[in-house]
Length: 388
Image (tube, rainbow, N blue to C red; front, side, top):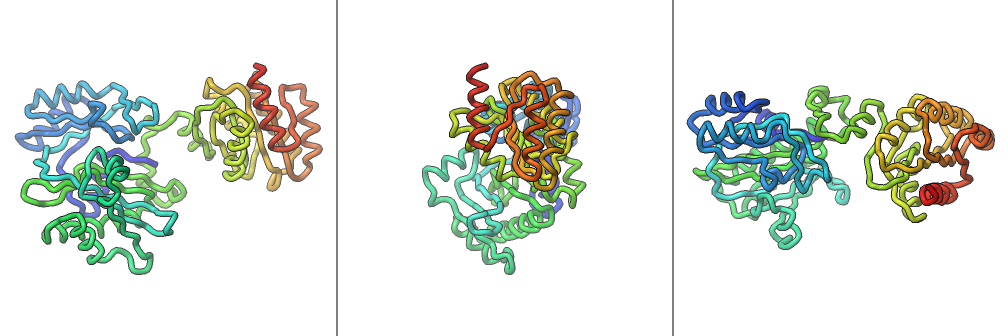
């Protein structure tokens, strides 16, 4: 789950990280009220969407006067914003964050993430922070510093000092970075996060460090332990189909192809998408309905797939282990009838009572084509799309 910048900063402040004072507003008048409460200015007005690159898209404005604050907020609120990090979607701007503008001396970068390669929580830091950190990593990788944290030892002050001096910070700033890194490590573990990013972590006038922008991503598998984080979810920022999948306990990711996939098991779903590509087409989605493929779950899965107008055929690939194949077939038939499908459905079943399941599908009188294996299913799905 992603978080807005203002939510990330609230969590940063809770764990002792320095952030500029500010508050969100949902109207231009409210933005003016926030600015006036902060002092004489200048201020920053920042669109709150689940994507980076807002500055280049006009979503971050420096405001010298109250009239500037009003104009900036009015120009953002109620619009939709697309950035190079929004995956081709224009996201709604329902809130703006109004903060004090700070005098930036230099911009640093710091992130914390789970590094599956080293099987550690890792810090990544650079003295070359800012909006083009990706280019820094690509063109001058020597400016990127990494700390792989030993799970038993945890983050120690000497780790932070080593990173600080590698980035050219002074002794006072090294002490501040130590506090920031220790706070980030506690936040990351306490909240079961997957990513925390400070960009920029700025050196401001007076030489102090301050987190001017922040990004947080949590581990959805741990959401049940953190109802407070779950309450921060903003479905308006998510793909509507993916948000619906979350509500129905389905794992769904929208893709760009024209063959919808309904599979039980993440590994089998990945393999299904690969075989579709090998057969000469593109998958329209990743969809794992889980081990208990009941009629209700299958029906909801069909609805999710059909929410895309790109889908021209659906490939169902189910292994009947927990649930028998004949029961799965009955669920597929009932779901197809309920949804009123008009596009071809190719179904590959394997497992307990597979022959009975295939027989039910073949005799259903619906546009459901049984397949004997995954390659056969993919080829039939591609053929159905090409003949449409």
